[in-house]
Amino acid sequence: MPELPEVAAAIRRIRPRVRGRRIVAVEPLHAATRRALPPAVRRRLIGRTIAEVTRRGKYQLLVLDDGTQLVAHFRLDGDWVVQGSAAVVPPHARLVLRLDHDRSLILTDPRALASVTCDLIPDIGPEADAPELTTDTLLARLAGTRTPIKLALLDQRRLAGLGNIYAAEALWRAGIDPRTPAKRLDRQQTARLLRGIRAALRDGERRAGRYRTGTRTAPFKVYDRAGRSCTRCGEAIATLTQGGRTTYWCPGCQRG
Image 1 (tube, helix red, strand yellow):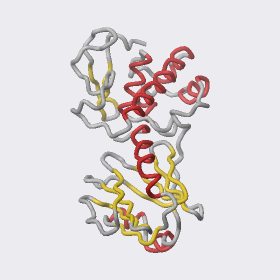
Image 2 (tube, helix red, strand yellow):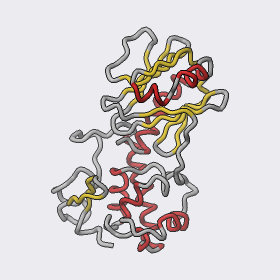
Image 3 (tube, rainbow, N blue to C red):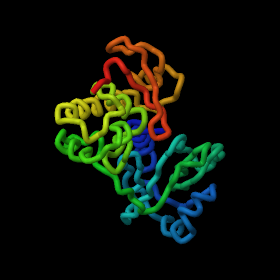
Image 4 (cartoon, rainbow, N blue to C red):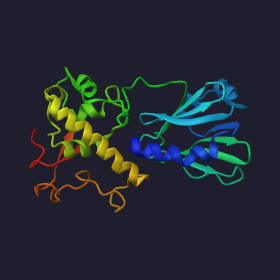
């Protein structure tokens, strides 16, 4: 699933190509998209200009000139395609926004899980990459929960932007066992975790693209390295299941 670095990269890619463009037609090509953007909403969007493209956590916001916000979420395999209006619509297109100046912004997703809604901003926590996020703020948001720290980091209401990959990477960098109850982290551990989160996200930003399993374009410290030697202690990277998802971790150096 695309996480904060991948979402930010997608925004940087489309922003200069669609900002300032006027919407001339809205074409939902999937039943779920038609339900999320009923005819009355689609009519309201036509004629509006895309004033800005930004994000909130893993959600992408197309902010229109009247303040309306189209909120997009890639889920697992969603992506944007920008092309000429006369070009053939790509396979698995779920929504086409026809823009002026012969341009179309298209949401594609082979699994049909990606979503676009209007003005439904999710209730989520502070941005994981926010400079103003402090150790004390993170400690307070993790306090009082017995949830394993890995799952607590995936809870967007506590912290926005992290997913399975970067949560695992951050915990490895911090040397914290992913099974540790979140409330047991002390201030020193939380400070290490915050540094680990920022370092993992910086690595993701340098890749500036979509991670694909089995490629050499996204070398992680622990994620997708089951059975391989830990680069820090030499122990074999192990896996466990948490919340129905695979967690990668090092039993040798993630002990506390």
